[in-house]
Picture 1 (cartoon, each protein chain N blue to C red):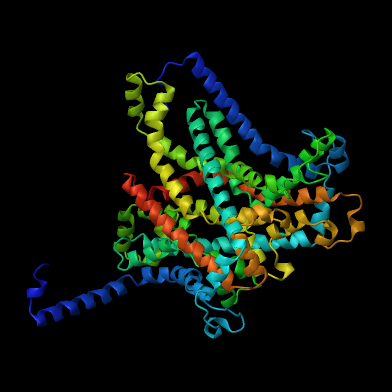
Picture 2: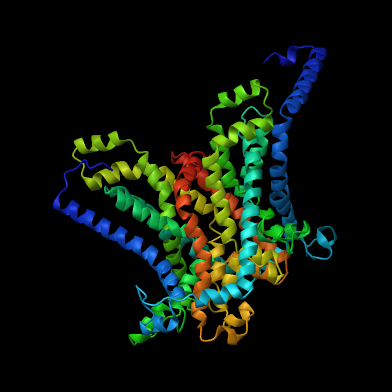
Length: 295
Length: 320
C-alpha cells in the first residue's frame, strides 16, 4: 500500500508493532533449525551444562556425525534417497514436459478431452486403498520404482508448465517448422532452451518432494535396505534404542547420548534442502504465480 | 450450418468421408504431439483411473488372493459396517474439528502475514522476513516432528528441561490429548504460513494503485483504505483458497497427523485417513477402509462443486 495518508502518531505505533511482530515471527521460524544444528555439533555434556540451551557453543564435535555415517543404515538411506531424487526428478520432468507441450497446443484435436480427464483427477480420486492395490498389481512393491512411478506427474506442476509453454512466442516455433524442423527437434532445440526457468522451478519442486517423501516408503517397501532417508529418520526419532536402529553395537556409541545422534540425523536431512533453498526461492514464486493465473 | 438437414444423403456421406479423411490426416500430421502424450496418459490411466475403478472393492468382501474378479459382492454391507461402527462418529468429529481449526487458524495467519508484509516499506527487512518464513514449507513433516521432539521430548527437550528446572510439571505435547490438536495447528502455522502468504501478496500487488489514491483524496486513512480497497482486492483469491480447502475437508492434513499420531492421542487425533491407513495398509483389510474412501471422495467432490457454484452465485469467479 503506498503511503497516501498522513502518518499520525498512532499510525507510527502500528508500524512499529508490525515490524516487531514480523521480526519475532522471522526469528521464531529460524530458531528451531538453528537449535538442532547447534545441538548436533556440540558435545552433549556442554548442552546439558547450559540447561539444554546455548546460543553460541564454545566447543565443537563431529562425533554424532561420525557415528551415523559409519553405521551403514544412514548412508544407505541417503544413497536410496539420492538415487530416487535424481532419477525420479529426471523422469518427472521428461514425462511432464512431453505431456505439457502437447497440451499447450490449442489446435490439437482431442486436447480438451485429455485435459479434462487430467483435471478431473484433482477433484476425485480413488483414495489410499485402491491406489495401494494398483501399485501392488503393477508389480512395483519392494522396488525403488514404487517411490517414483506412482507420483510420476504432478497435475499442478504439469498445468504450470503448460501455461508457461502457452506463453512462449509461437512465431519462433512456426519459423522452425518452416525451416524443416519436426516436432521433436522443435521441442528439443527451440522450446527447451527457452524454458530453462520453468524447468529449474519444477525440477526443484519435484526434487524436494522426492527428498521429503515418507509415505511411499512405508506403504510400498518391506525391505529395510531400501528405506529412504525420511523413513529411517522417523524410526530414529521414535526409537528408544538408537544403537538397534542404526544396527551398531551399543559399545561403539560410547558415551554419545541418543539425543545428539537423533539431532545429527535431522540435520543430515535438513542440509540439502537448505543448500538448494536460495535457488528455490529465486524461482518458485514466479512458478507459483504462473500456475495461479490459470489455476 | 443450418442447412445440413437439407442436403442430399449422398452429399452428407461425402462430407462425412471428408471429415474422416481430415481427421486421419490431422492425426498423421500431429503424430509426434500425440506420441509425446502417451507416457503421461498411460500414467494417468493406470495410477489415477484404475484406482477409481478399484473403488469397487468397497462393494466387495475383497480378498487379496482372489482379486477383484474372484471376490464376492456384498452390496452396501461395508458401508453399513462403517456407519454403524462406534469408531465412526469419533473419526468424523476429529476430522471435521481439525479441518475447521485448520481453515480458521491457518488461513487467517496466511492472510494477516501478507497484509503485514504489504505495509513494510523497508525492502531488505521485507525480503529477509520472507526468506525466513517461506523456508519451512520445503522441510518434510518428519523434520518438523524431529524439531518438536528436540523441544518437547520428555527428559531431554529444550522446553521440557526448562520447565523441569523451573519446578513446573512438563507437558508431553506428543502424547497429551488436551494439547495434541493445538500442537498440530501451531506446527502447521510455523511450517506453512510464509508460503501461504505468497498468493495473497501477489493479489495485493495486482490492486490498482489509483484506487488508493482516490480513497486518500476522499480522506480515507489506513484502516478505511484497508477495509474498502485492500480487502475487496483479495476477496476472490481468499474465496478460491477457501473452496480448495473445503474440497479437502475430510482429509484434515493426513500426512502431518499420521506422523505425529500415537496410541495415546487416538481419542482426539485419529482421523478418517489415519484409520483407513491403519486398517488397510497395516492390517491388510481392504474393503471397509475402501468404503470410507468412497465416502470421502464423494463428499470432497460434492463440496468443491457446491462451493464453486455458491461462489459464482455470489458474484465471484469461482475455480472455473
